Length: 477
Ligand code: NAP
Image (cartoon, rainbow, N blue to C red; front, top):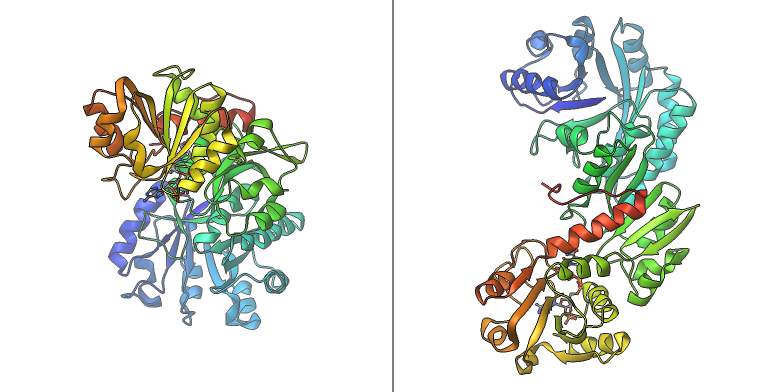
């Protein structure tokens, strides 16, 4: 189930918000401590028509309020264990048909020992539901929460368990599919009652938290991860194919610790900045392509072993080949970072003649040396001496949001170096039409967007994750 917290500060607004929330989710959580203009005497004004669909909470722990909610037949009331065991027991005794949630909150940290102690303490009071919420300072803090859910399941106890904060978001998504009673989702962005809360619509539509049961877990490991569209397209494909699988964003600080701790839980991963190279040493094996590139963007668990792959090279080459063949072509690639390694590898495999230009010239020379086959490395400032370039590739981050007015190659230089049928490919995919591509189109070049590469590599990744093919184009919206 999903509960939508009502964060309105007036009774009138709370009623309106609760009506909207009930159209989306099974339950609303009435946060009485946030509604300024009512006390226990006017509680009936905010109780929904079907009080069974309300969780009543008063974080100010005011005397008599919870008892009044029970009298008004609220479906659930939430009492914080900080009120003391005696007081909680007294309320439980007089609960009538209302279900009692006894909760523990730690707004600063997640300490597994403490959480287990509180879980046992609350369990001893025999409430209908145990609630444990703690603040995640690291992605690792979600694991004690998942273990608590497992423990409660084994002991046949009903539990709500989650981590608060940006780094706890995965617990808000995964707790219900893992067996928790409910998770909280905001009515809309800006109406969160706690940090890291995700809109209820997103929990329902994107993550299908009410439909999945012990799903296979996939995700993106990186830092940052918020910009990625992976969780949109992979989840849509899982839904379309009716798969009990989910894809979430893992905001990771230490990839070694993350892999060690999450290895048992995950079935596959996409890997992004800054871990594509570092991850290699934590995997059981990498395939020949990933080994040659020296970077992994896809991890798949096969028979308990983690296998590294790289779908970036194939994704880029497929995108370029929609517009031109590569064999024997003069190719200029600007950039010598992670994306350049994969794209450069693809160009060499397809027998292109590669020149790499980079701001840090030594990196261009090093990559050219590694790729071999006559590749050359030059400084970005001497691109203008080239001519008759058949394929121009931007593999730098220049032109990427928010610096969308920038181009890695100036117009005057571009005019000099291109031929009559030059194809220009920009690995940057946010925005789809970069400054470089706009300029190239005006100069009569054919253009290829980084979006094409992104979709191609994601489709290949999906096939590796699931053994199934899915068309992901246009599903990111
Ligand atoms: P990276 O490893 O950090 O490399 C960044 C590259 O850009 C380096 O060559 C760096 O030069 C250069 N650079 C950065 N800022 C610059 C500036 N102000 N002036 C000149 N050069 C600059 O990043 P990456 O992983 O390769 O990613 C590069 C781009 O490719 C990003 O926009 C990323 O989103 C995109 N990408 C797209 C896809 C896709 O599927 N379409 C896949 C992967 C990556 P120095 O060596 O001198 O620092």
